[in-house]
Length: 442
Image (cartoon, rainbow, N blue to C red; front, top):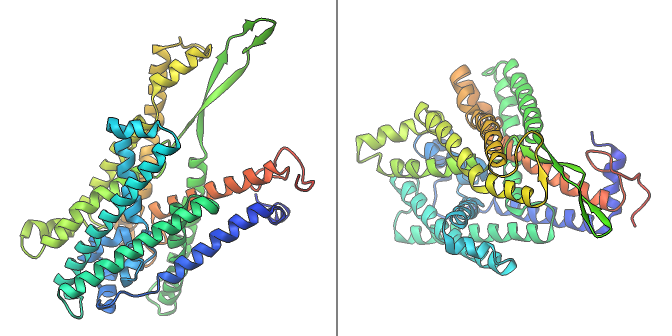
């Protein structure tokens, strides 16, 4: 529980105050930029199609949620941070599979700078590709005021420049602000949609189109899901490790007990993002070819975010990517070998191969629970739609499991960084009491 006294301690640390104010300033600039429209688009017709979740809605609803509704109105920041996020995911996959990229990750700061530069170039290419597809889809759906190459050029240039500027803003937050820049921008986009969703529900209730029980149910479900996310994200399995005593000269080393924490959700939000990126590819293709081929029209309709085919594919991809990503970021053999070299062992398990097998067993069990938990969150809007029908559409972005997971995860990460600053300066923590009572900064 955050006490008011602990919250005020934030303003007693000048460095922390500067970081927070810088982050807020960047977020304000970012949110001001989302109201700059792109020239040549029939915004009202586009907004109507996105609301109906047909055609464009099925292809771009995922990006629209993470962009805070900017895609719905075709603003300068319509693509948001998603090209950079997709590029980062691709480079992360390449760094784990391609030897040359894997070698760069082991070269320290210089290697990271080279990979970051490659990520920027890839994000530029993805933003050009996505904006070109969006321009083509807008023209084919008669949502452009003056179609032609002039519109396509200006549209692509506008969205690419906006996406690169958003990427730069995220990097500035990571360097000089608090929290991860890309995550903070997505967090701001998701939170920015809450007032609109709340006002929509209030308007529906006042007009008599919605029973008062539905908003209350959505609010209760929102609080329940958010609480479950906090509980499960902080949940971990602690594997005890016992170190043997060693005598080196006149000193005795080891002999103490420790533990290795295994998080319930080891891969975090990455499997959900992976699945979303993978599903967006057939969504884009089917949307573009729906008017020409009957099979793509059927695929476009069933790959909408409320379709059964989409739900099954998303569930399967999240399960697959959860185990795949966990296997890439955690090497049981390497961890077991490091413990053995340090003179440690797990009680009841032999060092070496059996320890690695034990880690694999624990990861598989926790991974299954974590994967099901992620899949359930991602499919929450579809489940609500199937249970209560069209009425769920009123607050569908408000109850998006993916959005909630990102929002709560970023909030927990940012709170943890603030708490580390407080405890470092001998203050009580923001969420938990620190080791020292508040006695002023050192």
